[in-house]
Amino acid sequence: MSARETGAAEPVLALDPIACVGHGLCAELFPEGLVLDDWGFPIVLPEASDPALRAHAKRAAKACPALALRLRAARR
Image 1 (cartoon, rainbow, N blue to C red):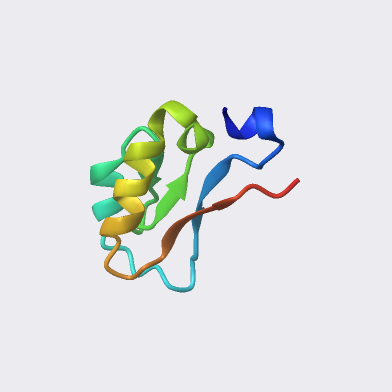
Image 2: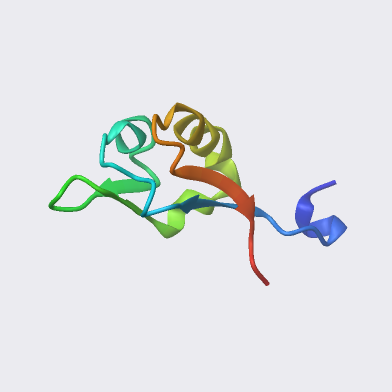
């Protein structure tokens, strides 16, 4: 059963801009969902929440050396 069928919120990739120091590893690991701005800080794209890409989002969040990325429940 999917999160939508059970009424649970789909997880979304969230960025803590205060914690981020711009390593850029996340965008290397997950270019479908993250791009870097002119200063090297990530911008989370809407595609980052695609359930088909969730494994890539998890990998990018897990690899963040500053722990600035995480998957969290979507706000309703």
